[in-house]
Length: 528
Image 1: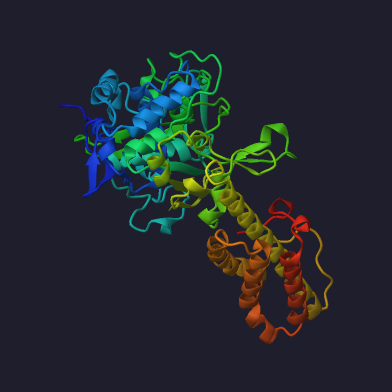
Image 2: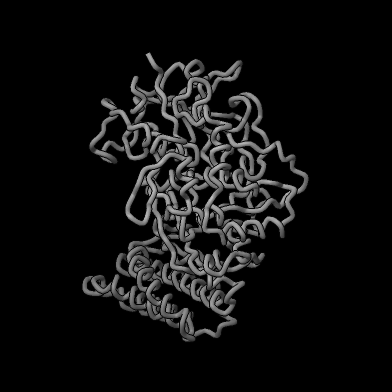
């Protein structure tokens, strides 16, 4: 009997968007036709974000832009010429790359299945269940109503191509905590670390075609003395992963983009190889995760934090609108600003004008905790904002930053004022002393902020093209939001009137204060 096989380099397993519709292609066709493909069309955004990283590493290999000895100016010039070319990637280079590792692109390969560890079949006494791999299906103690069409007691097989998508997401966004026990030599454990992208939001530059997008994803080597032969992607390594040894250092670009997973997996196919029926999911290493700067994340800087926690990836928040991230993308690095532009955007000024004019940013965030609980993932696509970058239009970039900062400042004041008004009203109504210590956000503040942020977004787009004082405009929106959200309380809580009047006065004072005395968003804490 022929063993199951699913070579993802030739099997049509990746949905892509062409001018005439959506098509499924293998990885070879994807790269060869990248200049004729608009973008990836994976229905699982987490897999799309992960696959961008894998494809970018492959793009570096087939273009020669993975040479650490290449001077920066030469690297930029080569990429610029590639972006000006209408011919796409060299088909011969693409096929040569996949031919080199052809046996390792088989999803069910007997010894080196793609992005998996075949030794799990021996080292893990129990399988994890296919539902544990699939985002949205109930597994273990997960909420049963998260996906009502599946149950943990009757797991349904998963088409092989969809299993591939979830495998990509698992390596990047996988949970921490309990997992299937794995015994490797004398080391036995059932504990996981969280995936390298867990809780984060990624910012992916997007060109007019997938070819442009992958070239825009590339970043040049900025280190010193890397051995050109030291850098390998997981499928390029001469031997399978060793869970006992410390993982190799993070090198550029292969290990940086594809080699930081701390999870191990092994898919179990049905006899036909068309479906996956079960899986082993466990740890890949018990060593501490290696620190690295992902080129598609915004890093927030906190000078008051300890050195090891001073620079942290911005957390994904489903309630945070995309326009609130624009200044971190458009402004160059500044130690005084909280957000540090993703590295992928630091070399986008040396690209053809036609590419720059069409550049947009695709955003993918996964709002989840650091261990096992997942809230929701979200995506967004910016307008063509790169012409507003500081290097192209410093006035516009500065105005965008000022408007965003003013919106955050008024949100913080709105929360504080609404909370205080609520406490004052309750204290007067119940003749009770006010509570001291840290308080949770009140219902008034929650409702006021929910009403404020959509209004603030409309005001933001108007303000970036006019010269009105931003603080005053956002103060007016905050006052309106507070009034809308508390109007009913005035009818049955007579004591609320004076408290709300004081809150409105606090908002007006911030809106009318001279610019050099206004607090910044960094001095307060706003809840979206």
